[in-house]
Length: 194
Image (cartoon, rainbow, N blue to C red; front, side):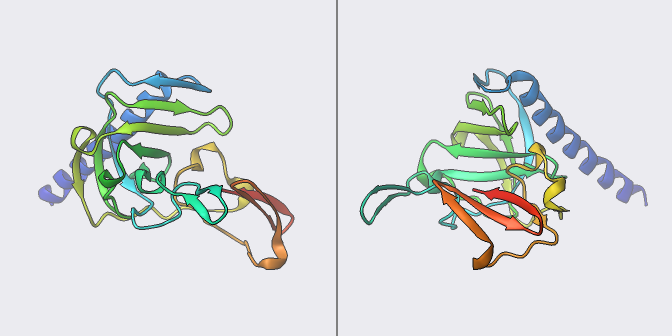
């Protein structure tokens, strides 16, 4: 019993450290601004995307039949272990993103650039160097289950893994496409999907 309590305490401390690190990002970077992170802000995060997926970043159409996909191999989405807050990370070089869905990483954001959008209130962290910023990396983590109705979504759900409840998607529901945004109609609600 004592060993189980020690393990629970250790896991709780790690999760709290991750949440504190993310809270530090919110306090360091004002909405609508870019900020260089000049202190060691460390958080343990779980990967909710996959480096092998071709859909991590917009593919820009540069000419007829030619897509610019270099950002795809550099982009990864992570969330806190409790799934409450997510970040978009952009690595310096495409070959550095070797993170798969469910990997748990400890990240030191020192030397990176935090870009905080105003609406939605979300973060993109760029300048990630796998050798310098990824402190630990292990596979086999469990992505938190988070299910919500469209009406329950908020800014903290951006860049996290959310299963939408009571939504049907088929060709008759597609309303329109504008750039990289797809607008869907879902049972009396409208949602834009990137």
